[in-house]
Amino acid sequence: MSNSGKKIRIAQPVQQVVVDADLLPKAPAQPVAAKGKGKPKPAGAPMAAVDGKQKINIVAPVAPEVAAMRQKLRQQSIRSQVERIDAAIEAGTVSSADAKTLVLTLAIKRLGTKDVAEKWYRSQKLDAFAGRTPAQMVRAGELKALVALMRAEGAPAKG
Image (cartoon, rainbow, N blue to C red; front, side, top):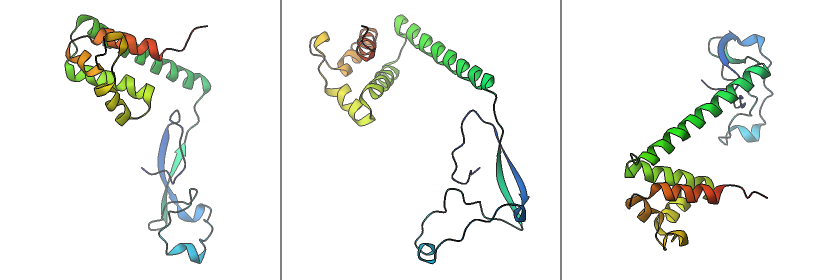
């Protein structure tokens, strides 16, 4: 389903319907200089009509109470996922591949990109752990301590 270049807010359900193309407003003609250059259609341009019919998106408004409830449910889901991960770390049941993924995910949030996080994971010597790298910590099974350190460093300073 395409949306003719307009952004649709996630909280809004979308339904695609087919209407008579003659009922829709006409898009302004493109200048002659822009036609052959392969430029994309303007953001508001309607999709091409087929047999006099055209598909359009209908966006239903969402009540603020519904949007707030959806946000609350998303937050509860995230909290429960974090609790499951923390329980697995505590029990020591996290595989080394999953441990690496978890550490890299936390590092990406702090450092910005996957490449920088990978480099940090393999080569950053951590003073708190006698100069060992995060990769060495994961291989040694010390994921709990590493994650605790990363969360402490990533937490905003309390003042």
